Length: 326
Image 1 (cartoon, rainbow, N blue to C red):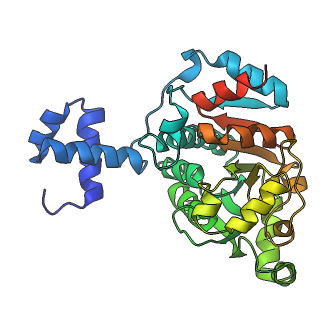
Image 2 (cartoon, helix red, strand yellow):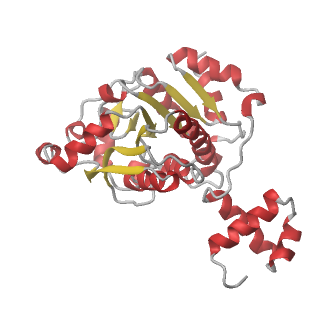
């Protein structure tokens, strides 16, 4: 099997293990590979979305938590993933288990999007950015929705290609056979004047119009701390972070910074960010994806803004969020 590509090896290993029911030792013998190599291939198959595992989560005991959150914030639905029992330290950025809540929420988000596309084959899906949405896009392989359109809800030219809106849109379009569109401008302009000039360009106005017609919007939430993705990617400075916190901001989504009550905070960045506003998101079926205990405060705040229709959240964070509502 030396002439096979890595993806072909992943596919064959996954078929032997998940479909044929061979254990790792039998799979390794069948393929002429070491067991360690087979184990790595199976892990890669899951991480890339080649293998998608579905579990009926209705019997995991979090229904009362979902109902509490849904009722408190007037949501159409709340979906929780299994609680892993992670501590704050274990779920902190760069900790060994930090990616588990993000992967779980990304997988649950992919299930939601699969169902939405099945019911709405001509859907216009607006997307934000971030690690959770990147995980979601990796779980969409095998979906056939050639008439679907995916559009970024914000400026797509960011410093890191792994999580930016362009990559998320392209991954979703490629996985489903649909069409991908993006705003070919920076996430945050250098000045309000620059933003105004960019917004008048036809290359921006047309995809912006499409974004406003999204029938579902998938967004994530960020906490405003030094370890947040905005700071880690250098998209805002430390001084801007301090100014935002001083102005009362506790979180952000798509470059919209909000306080504990969910209201947008007045700050210079507001006039420099390129993307849809709260009033636009309120007109569509906006679904929030939140993964990680460090995002509970920001999640509670954005839900108080009452423009989010649905929530997909990891079990540990859902329990913590429900506890803060007592």
